Image (tube, rainbow, N blue to C red):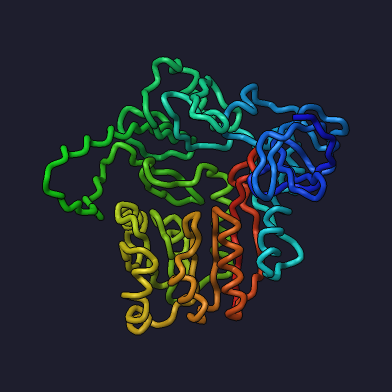
Amino acid sequence: MASQIVKTEKIVSGGDCLAKIDGRAVFIPFALPDEKLEIEITQEFRDYSTARILSIKEPSPHRAEAFCPLYGKCGGCTMQHCDDEYQLQLRTAVLRDAFEREGVALPPVIEQIATDPRAYRARFQFHNGGLMARKTNEVVALDSCPCATAEINKYLAEIPFSERPGGRVHVFGSDRILSIPDGYDKLVIVQPAPPPRPPKKTGKKQKQVKKRFAGTSPIAPGLCTVSLGGKAITFDVQGFFQSNIGVLEKTIPAITEGLSGKLALDMYAGAGTFSVFLADSFERLCLVEHNRDALVYAGQNLAGKSYDSFGLSGEAWVSQHAESYVREHGAFDAVVIDPPRSGMEKAVCRWLCSSGIPQIRSLSCDIATQARDAAFLCRAGYKIERLFLLDFYPQTCHIESLAWFTK
């Protein structure tokens, strides 16, 4: 296919740059706004095309040399071709676009919470000793990563690629680690056991029982305790925990600032990381989290505090417990909600819209679903008082955010 010259317009969610050819959208990886590029179309879809850069005719003044030799091959980073300050501007613009598309009114300034854009990542999943290549199932071998913590890089430097465990391996390494299993030094490595073989098929169909809670061991192989904002937080490396401890520590005050009262709800509470800090300002907490293993760690983290926990989905809690809980304990003074990528469950969003709770602090790892949910809340009478870009993943276009809703 013949090459074409285009002028790029803006970065879109995911990190590609938008250009137009005869009014048709073309998305170009590793491009920046206001560049003149020679491109080649790589795929045609019904409403848009994708392309690759053949040459850069007029580069952006913000274009930079990648600092990692694996950039472009490794599937991790997508923004190293851009200087750090401009990256923040671009991610902020993408965040604003997501909310404006939903018709949500925003404050004039989107605040940014960021730290060092290198050596920040404490949590990795390695596949057969390496990282997955960009848009393929190939494994990229590496002996260091400039975005990884010193502890992760020590592991990569000391254990040759050929000697690393196979399969998917969870690794967490940080100088914030306080307590880990015996034999580890500021690093936790967990290789999940292979899945059991499926039972042989028989003529009679066997009913499969979904295991909800098998009990959580206080000495699980992935158990880890870190220092966060002066508090000890315990979690399981095989579960979810933020990779960027520096940004997480700066985000917590932005979540809890100005909140206090008798009762707070921590929806999708995980291991209770936010509840540990909310407990300083509220008489009682209510935690809702479908992962009951995570709630066991939340209980350890909240030892000595007054709280109730429900090992249920948000939807189940709303339908089965919300009304009776409020009747027994009184109205919530505030809610902190941190839903999965899919956003709030519909029942949870409807309940919040009708709840009248004066303060809602909503975190999100997907700006499109957060903007969607924000539109419902705003139509119900809430307004966004403050919006934060949480820069958990520098060198990528992955955006997390925090919104303050007030009523």
